[in-house]
Figure 1 (cartoon, helix red, strand yellow):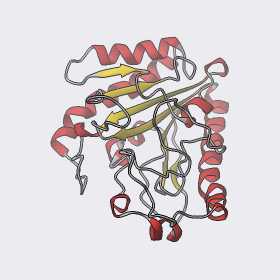
Figure 2: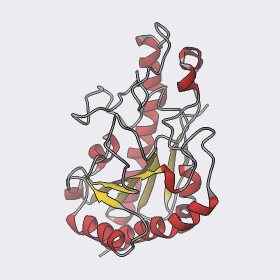
Figure 3: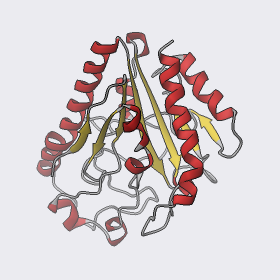
Figure 4: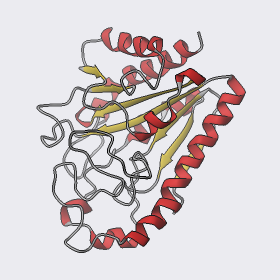
Length: 262
């Protein structure tokens, strides 16, 4: 399978969706625990949720492989992004802390290095290439890294996660004006709770490619999945909930574009 799906757009915006993939390599599939075979830490339905960005004219990059193969939102050297609990480049545990692989069945180092070359690297090559193309055309470029996660994961955070979790690497990945515009849009509604740079400040993609001093802005949005899907297997899509969430998502994307164009 190709490492990603990509469509080129006509706006200075690239939507990155690194964790919606469900493809497994034979080596990973053979070693997964029963719990991991359900792919519980997938960003389910995110490409469908953001379909509207293509009609707006954005470029879209979607990873095809599960994060259990290799996590393209982690640095290639596997350095930790947070001091609190997290998962790595080759996740050994699920978000709930249980093992990803049966004892002794994780892929060996040679397999992992192959997947780093053949899956992780092509995703980042395409991401960097498209950002460069858009920046050359428009003079600036916007990256929106789209994620979702179960709303309650005691190992990772206390209580229930806010609905909308914006991350700007504590202000380092985008301008203050953009952060203010996005939080202002959140403040104008009361249906969904939100936070800026809370438990999720942005993963490797946001941190590595957000360079506002070079007119390259990056924002991550981590959505609580309860707002558009069933959080238990088989992780079904909820059209009724999605219809309520969609206007806010579109408002955030449009606000991002408008503010950057000022």
